[in-house]
Length: 329
Length: 124
Ligand SMILES: [Fe+2]
Ligand SMILES: [Fe+2]
Image (cartoon, rainbow over all chains, first blue to last red; front, top):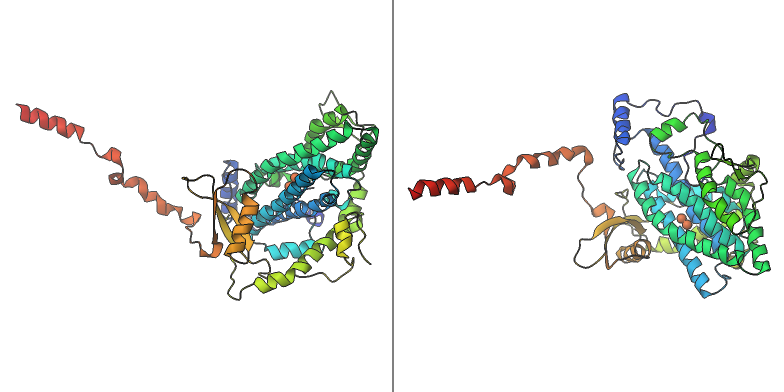
């Protein structure tokens, strides 16, 4: 789950449109059906706003936390060009977070509240970033395959209905093509290198495969709200569909390098045209997302420390006369 | 307990795992500036997004980092979001009357018939 809509399972049976004015709702839905974008000050159902804030905020947190496992290797990147490229990629990811925080902010949640909810553990971010990047090869696998997954998700969401989110995603997707190429380049370099290098990249791939299979989240085809969220163009594709799209694009490229994936059942089913695979361990997914992963504590502590260390500077710069209005778009 | 990380930068920072969470107060992240970027000399600046910043100078710096990392940009303007006045989409009927103002459109001025008629009348 990168920037996915999320429904509180406790409220699974309530309707998303409870208490909404039926005329306004119909007009709103007609606009979306016509392909119009919704802008910040337009009328929108309360649950549309809520779902978008949650989704965009979670996406922003994923970008900023996601730069931590990759950042681990900046100081030890092999060679100057790779160090420069990794720094540029990490800067892009932090920039993506800024764009997304701004998009979420247009819906009425302040940036301070979003950061507070991240460091207190109230808000979630993509689960994959709770795992460590053990070797340089892990950073290569992340840059190639986690970014590939992110691109599948972001391209789908960029066709959504909320204007500021779509515009942020357009900018983000343009930069992701560099991330993907950079990651692929690093993986190919190792996979076509010495036996030690091949071993490194194979190990990293084996380690990262379960989190990659978790990336799009559990199947949501039976979710009672999916239909409404899809009609509102908040959710653009089911988690299963995005996972299938990812497998279809990248498994052949991985196998092509002579690398293997730790799932004996993984194969394209020629009858259905879909990929068969072993269902990932969703209990592990739940355990990690709720704080039980190897790096959850580190990620949040690093983020909290960054806010703490910068606070005195921000305090010194803050003028008495400062006023706040919501960004325009 | 100190965080032990694979990242040497994190180890150097000597971070405590369990500590009271900081709570950012209102305006900790300052206000926003809207950013306008020009892709080449001679064309209009175009709105590209916003940045949070403590003042104009920092806003320009952040805008450059955020919106001009790659691709073409030759100039940036920033302006406080709170200094911008806007119309409302709700009131977009204020633009409706423009079509009725035919006197503003060149096509509504037809002189050729008149000239032709004049020439016919005076050549006799
Ligand atoms: Fe990103
Ligand atoms: Fe990326």
